[in-house]
Amino acid sequence: MFAILEKRHSRAFRRAASLTATYLLLLCASAFFVVPYLLALLASFKQPNQIFDGSPFALPHPATFANFTQLFRQYHFGIFILNTAIVAFAIAIGQVIFCAMAAYAFARMQFPGRDVLFYIFLATLLVPGSVTVIPIFLIAKELHLLNSLLGLIIPYVGSSTFGVFLIRQFFLRIPEDLISAAKLDGANSARILLKIIIPLSRPVLFTLGILSFVFGWNNFLWPLIATNSQGTQVLTVGLAALQGSYGGQWNLLITGGVISLIPLVILFFVFQRFILSSIQLTSFR
Image (cartoon, rainbow, N blue to C red; front, top):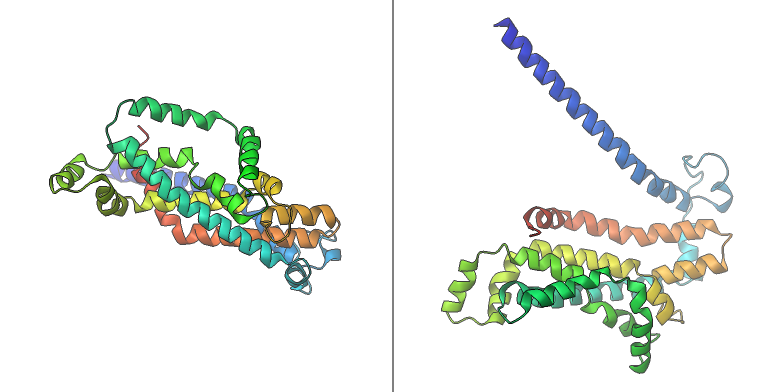
């Protein structure tokens, strides 16, 4: 009896020790990623002479909002945020719509060469994005889309190969019986997609929307090439210009970086359950 109890206590102790070690490891790893953001947040409330004086972990004394007000009043940072939000939302909505239609065709519609065409399409993931910049620039120039928000949106609205792949894999998990029953009731492909597939696929669609929004929010190379006026520039280009013109004012650069991170953090915490659901339910087969 005592041997059984001792064995149980030993097993419980090992389990508790294993969990403790795991949580400590996760805590250290999370601190490694979170601490730089906390330091940036502290620095955004410091005066310029306090950023490099003393410990970076020191609290701002006194805390100031001058960095934020200077960015918005003197450097028109609000225009960059508005342009970035418009571009990111448009890219996210467009990619969700077009990727869902393409994924349904590759997953559920029957036509000659479907699988071969899909794998050829999937192979474009191996092509670096920088390779297509010059062709896209020439096309945008001919269509008079340069230096406009449309020129930042249109090249990326329906061009997410990964998005098509992600949604297709999710669509393959939807039972074929549901689609067959809808076809027997006389539903066409568009009605099946809108009334059956889309409602069942909300987690993966939200996930793609979030990933597309983050891409549009952080995109730098194409907006740098396609825009040359402050009225059409986005956050990434605005921060780069700020660094080039005012490289000594690190307080403004850090504050601008903190402002650009806030919407992404909010977005993740609001929609994180959809991201986790799509990861759990998507089968990459």
